[in-house]
Length: 548
Image (cartoon, rainbow, N blue to C red; front, top):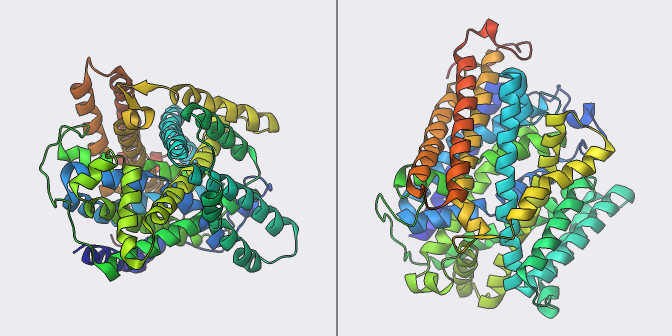
């Protein structure tokens, strides 16, 4: 049964890329004759034209993180795998993919501006500034969640800690050699991919000593600070490109394992419309904000318009990198969902219900019939997850620095370092605490999911306005916008009601995010319904393809 689910997902994803991806490219008039910001603003640090395969590796590694792993696992645990799988498919193809495509397209046609800066330009100055604040808050949650999970993984596995350090060293060497020597990119790939994967064996041979979680948190935050100010071609690009191979191995091994061994499904298809463990406790809207990045993620708009758009060599790469990247993430989300439903309730309880450990245990169980030792499969899965975590962390920190520079009009060597320190200050304080006896990531996940989904709605709304300004029919963006506005706002409202008087860490930020989200959305909707001649923004481009 699981084999049928995974194969069906892969087939539907391929069909969606071929037909709906082509529709998006045609409707928006992708044209390689337009120079990208990587060429027009090339600076050797952030704006660097790069081959599509390299950019795809960076983009996918950055957007994946643990979102498409943690979210689908929790959703299947709360409400059953049926609703989770359905939302992953529909959300990935028609909502998340459109969101990512539009965010990247707007950025490359706006000199590499972030989604918040684009909103500021076409919706209004005050709204745009509030959008930037909203995005910064959302990214603070991302840093808290991913830094906490990374440190926790290092505490639980010295093998993964050593392999992660080895990986960073290899990535820097790869970047320097490709940029500074005559060794071709293809030759370097053949050398460094095996060397990177060998890090797991080095970790098995020389695992890191057991040290406290707080020490690892300091190490992780220092890494994020250094990585955020290093030129992209020396760490961010090579590290993300190499880390994508971990993902490819996980995906291929997982799919092959599922198809060849056809493991039975132990989890329930549907567990009911309510679950007190979820936050909020109701299937609608909790399913949407829990699956989060596995179907649609506002964080993707920040990556797409923050770092990726500054590296695209050609405009047509938007379809492959943005839409294609989201579709592959849908496959990863389905596989992640599969790792919990192949486990019995006893096996899930044995790992404490921790989604990261569930993923590792489930994947090792899927691979075991292929002759992969359980311990090796578990360590590899943990290393792959941790690779995505670190990749998202350094990208997120860099994105925060971009937003701070945009908010205050900075763009200098000093702002690169000062902005990085500023954006790590708040998460650097909060990540060391526990809330209601839970680690920071678990306590803030419901708020992270709601804020993240609301950010996606605002990005989609901005895209709809952009399409209107350029006289392109926007129905394919407006309908997803309505869905993504309703779900997170309902979730935030229910969260306030559910936790009022019990958890101020969730209640007051939820109120603030609800109010800020409603205001920004309302201002955007007013612009969207306004006659086109009264809408600010670029001079309209020629009309593209008719029809909806």
